[in-house]
Length: 374
Image (tube, rainbow, N blue to C red; front, side, top):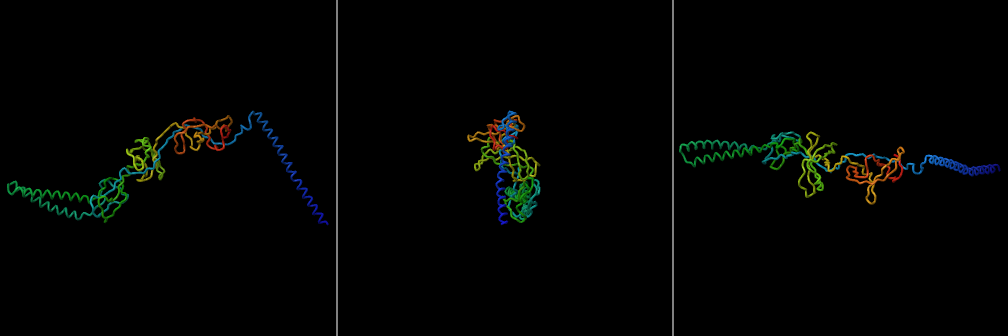
């Protein structure tokens, strides 16, 4: 009986607590609403006394701005070029034979006329000795016949034969000595030896290179320009040469413009000299050629991503117009006319002036006439 009584009492208390809880929350909600109403009334009273509109004076978004200034703007024609030596000559033999000596190796610095290699000349030397002996005999016989002829002894035919034989041997000896000289291979230019391709004991013949000599004191960058820039690229034009592998940029000028168009790729060649001693450049190194084809020293430019476009193709930007309140401005939509674009920036031909404040960030959610903070 007691157990039943306590159970009923507990259940009754729990039900009373559950019924009272919503009433407590309802009272709290009513109190908060009353307080909010008082706060809103006070805000409206203050705004009225300040003679401003709460809806229009409160900034809707925070934005970033950039002041418009005049600066130089250049447009470049970007090309991929390559470093070439002004003098790069393959060294070849003038006669066939077996190499007995190669006197240079890769990287050697040589002067013009320096001996680089020698072809086997043993047989040729024996021929020279033999001809010299024959020539001495023919010379002696000629001198004898000449003396006799001057004394009116002997016939004119004998004298002419002796003279012809001597002259023929002289010519043969001169020819073979010249050929013997060709067994020596000399440097045609001064420079650095590159790519020695043959060794002693190997055969060589005319047209087969022994090595390459590169004159690294005179280098140039060569590139191919599309045909549509033919009227804009002239000899003497300024060019910037950038070397990605070195992270270095050099200013130069166009020294050569090809007068012909390559019919295969519709391009023409240009060259720019590299200043002597200006860097550790190597033949065939990649370079970016940036040829200036347009320049405005007092241009107004903006990042390309700030230009918006209507469906009809009209370009515009958002400008912040100060409204007299610190760090606040009114958004204005300003049509602009754009010019050339390079390296992420576009030239503004009209619509903006120095001192204008262009909105650079937060433009996704704004429209003309809004008040924003910056």
